[in-house]
Image (cartoon, rainbow, N blue to C red; front, side, top):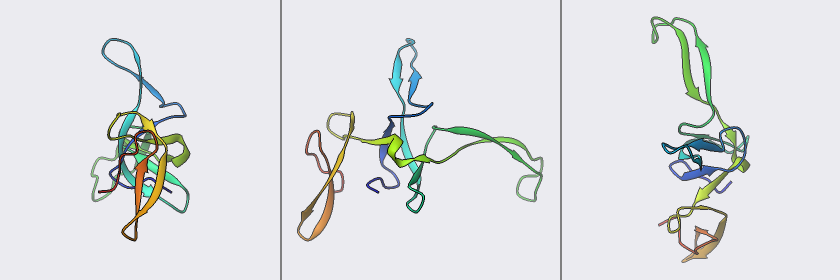
Length: 113
């Protein structure tokens, strides 16, 4: 999996693929990766795939009720955002000084510093 926690990604498939901006135009949804699950190949993206969870009262949450939270989506449904062009791009790996470094295929810009 080429996506890491903290990366900016765009949703390229699914129900949350597009959102509308203030002018009413369709814009691709983007967000920061909050958590990565490599075994199941899923990621949690900030503000994407919001689900309602019914929470029973507990010591941490006195009232309980319905809370909204992000649910994981498959990693194939997101693409890393190129730091140079600010568009979704594919990711390549190259070896520099014995270290593997991710780079954007569109611009050739290094993602890992």
